View 1 (cartoon, rainbow, N blue to C red):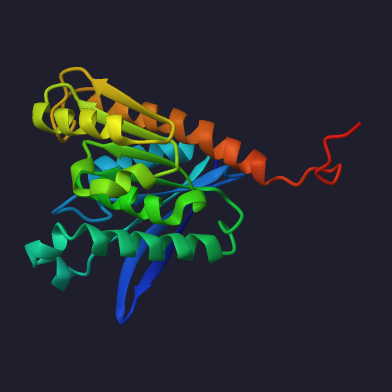
View 2 (cartoon, rainbow, N blue to C red):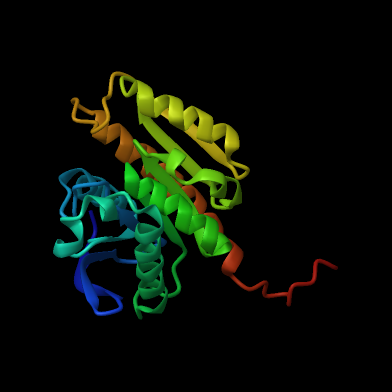
Length: 230
């Protein structure tokens, strides 16, 4: 893996300061903001492992706490998808104004309830988000906003996570954007089985590289001034 610069940042949510870890590989092609699941934080070992794979693929990553320690003690906050989505939007604003990442296309990686927040925020930010990956997500918590998601969306679910798999199958049918459902055979909700998380990381990496590169290409001005005439 090439050189990766690590930065400590803070996402400001009114009077609350949410700590984050920003990792930027040399010549990054995009940045992925992580939204962790219920009961977790930016130090989630599963998300950290996925982020490391994304860094190796040339993608910057931001892992941050969606809630303060006091907020996380209230279980209502943990499942408050609009609140979590609002924090994700604030993190996106940070990325889009940060000197080292402001010119990079942005993607979301969400796990469990964090995936619901990622889809909710993507539906509201629309063209500002280039891709979404959901790991064992709860898209049912997004409701009718699913149809408003425009970012290409990859739903990754464990084959042994039957209830969540059915929810994702239903959500896949409701999405109106480019989307794909990937099932990791034998994996349960937390993808703790051998090589299961590796499969998630590889699938996510391929999806983000594909669509964040495409978004970057679209952002490059046409040297001919935008005319297609010869």
